[in-house]
Length: 176
Image (tube, rainbow, N blue to C red; front, top):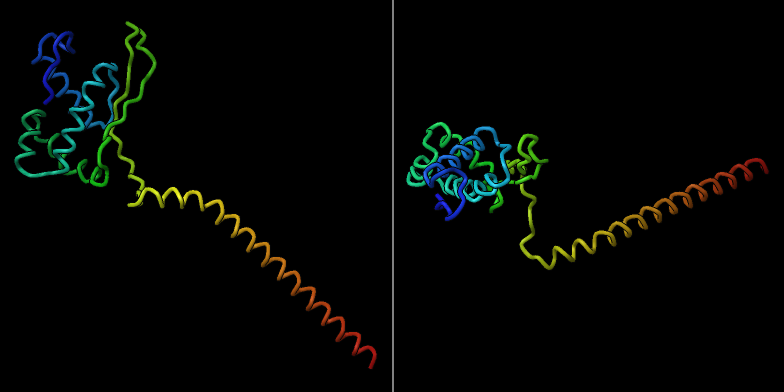
């Protein structure tokens, strides 16, 4: 659990701030997205990332650490058994923060914090060849297009040749 900062807090006291963060994390686990103020969303993000990392590692000790903060067995079950496998391939960046228009009543900046559940695109192990492959793709496409044109030209030439042979055979038959 991140320690409450000095100065202005989300709640009146450090204990209240912890409760606010824990409740937002619980809602985020259950609903997978929460609309709240931008300040709260920014404060919840690192805490939620650490909870998901604990869930990915698994084990009784880490489950008890998560239970200590979440205070709800059902939420901990959802986090460890349902969400953790979805993040197995992802190395970090489990949450997404999207800014929304300001709230109408008090003009507070709003944001939506959500879990990133989309699958991760596979990366190649070598960074340099990946760039080379990207550079070679247009060349490969151009080469394929040239091959296709050459095949079409060969097919047209073969048809013309067949027509010429047929014309010669018909002329030879007519001459007989």
